[in-house]
Length: 593
Image 1 (spheres, rainbow, N blue to C red):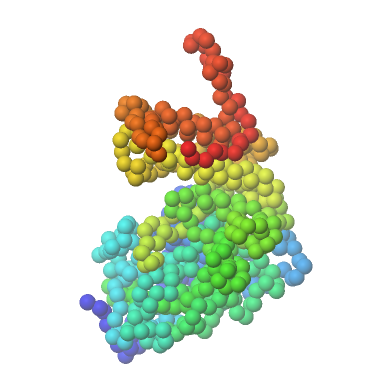
Image 2 (cartoon, rainbow, N blue to C red; image 1 turned 180 degrees about the vertical axis):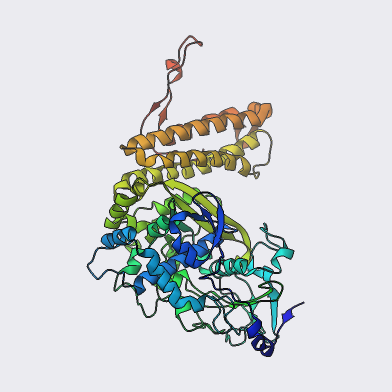
């Protein structure tokens, strides 16, 4: 049954409403450097930046959403204190000053104290990330479980539905921040005052903004390093932002049920993007639990194209939309659920194209992704400054995203991967090594289609239907390759000669794949070894595991550059060790038979 509450009841109960200020009350889950777990307030987390190892919320997307909030606070605090660089000034020197400063915590604390009233989760006029009088024409709202994406019909769950029906204030705050960033699309409650509502319903306007992104962040040993590694320095360059417009919700006039625009609208800058309000929300507190009900309605519909100020996502080029709109059109690069690591590294290490997409040869030439600004800035003088300060510090790249289902109205899975790296590999000095990593990925993805075809032919050789697909076997091979690739990537920056790094990977690729091929032939069994004849266009064709092993091994040698001694070179004495493989530069890979 829907829960109802009249406006009169809500206003008359103001004095009994709970108080929960995010600046002072603990709500952010973290893991400290001594491996203990804690919940910290905003005030505490900025006070103890060097004691916090990582955010440790219920899900990776919750951590990413909270991180975006922390970054917005940091940027606004620095701007408010005048920690910016004038036109022509050095962003590298500014970053170095911020990194070495002992006043960073004080700057943020002063900022939080100034705006603390707007961080009250239950303020009767301007509750944090909410609309105080949000209501439907029927006065209905749902229980608190709707804040949590994995309760009810979803595929996974971090807590039971009974637990989620009533949430403590700290939990509600975490899930509220996540909801604005990653909420599913679909029909929402129709709020009074929203001109877009039809028949009491708010029709789909898309997921939360972060849900469209393949988020990439650098992670250092403490939250202090992590924040400063990811600080988008262009956000502190005078002239690149409008200080009167690029504001978070807590510095603006409180939102109402009405959206900024009935149509798609643009963000006013990086802070606006980091705290984008794709929804209008109202939390309903109760005496027994801090939050017992929630109302979720549509908020501001953000244009998904050409949001180049988004610091933590690569952008992909769209030929179709460019042709339709008559201008270059780019969209956020989402993570690939099947190839998260491979495609993720491709986007991070992408090499800039020569000229603009519209000047490249071919009707639809392949256009490299635009690298996420937080990563791209490392390929400048700023990267050299960061490398000087943190060059010997172990860091990683964290990829986070969501795979949505039917019309983006359900979540299929959350995507999360951690990639080992170094600052040096991401600077301009690491360009050649990054290129070798891109070549390594290209070989894997090129060979993947051929390997899949090989497995199909083994099934055919054993009498299976040509329509059968061996996805499980290919996935197992890819999983083993991924582990090897991450190991290789972790040591990539140690190579002084990029060609040696390339050779090391090709050998690893060959060994793992040859082993998978031999295992597949064995698993295909004697029936596939004997094979079967099939008449095609009047010609008898033998399908056998031996034939297809020869074919796939030829493909493997060509793509890895492995040169195997011929039969005439094999030793006459079978007890003598055969000659080892020689390695040459890979040639052009042949197509399918």
